[in-house]
Amino acid sequence: MDQQPALTALGEQRAATVAAQLERMRPATFAHSRRLATLAVRVARHAHLPAPLVSEIYWGALVHDVGELSVKRAVLDKPGPLDERERAILAEHTIVGARWLGAVPGLVPLVPFARWHHERFDGTGYPDGACADQVPITVALVAVCDAWDALTELRPYRAPRSYEAAAEEMWQHAGRQWSRALVTWLLDCIDVERATEL
Image (cartoon, rainbow, N blue to C red; front, side):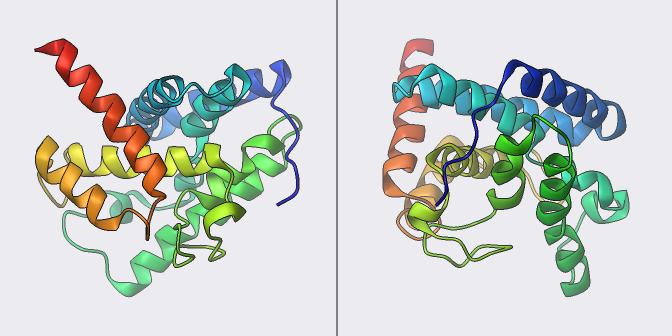
């Protein structure tokens, strides 16, 4: 994969503007993104990633779902399973978000977060079927943390899973949906935090 440009101070300012717009227009989506950004930064620091990558992870996580602004609330907030048409509409948020970010000077480094946060390690994700080393580690880390947040937080269609159930599900899909190394980073970080809370 081609080297992405680095996120600059201008990019961070513009990402903050995008995040503020998301907070105003879709508070629930923003709350998820803020939790995700906080978790992803904790995991990145636990894994001793360099500071510039940690910063990119933070901003990328905050704006990764900006394409959901194009999705009707009835689809996002549906209490039951989505039908095939609704799933296709929701899947478009990755492409729309990437296009929006790519059109803003300074935000090009964050485009992969919007486009590829639903890709899978084995290439069965969307929208591009990108796999393994095609997706930057920063984006793959956000995707792992995104899944954890989805499992452990209340959703319109289900109750949150316990730590044990969520961890078991992450391990079941490690090596296929996510890199085993990134699942290890995530759960090790959470285990350390849980141990300090006891």
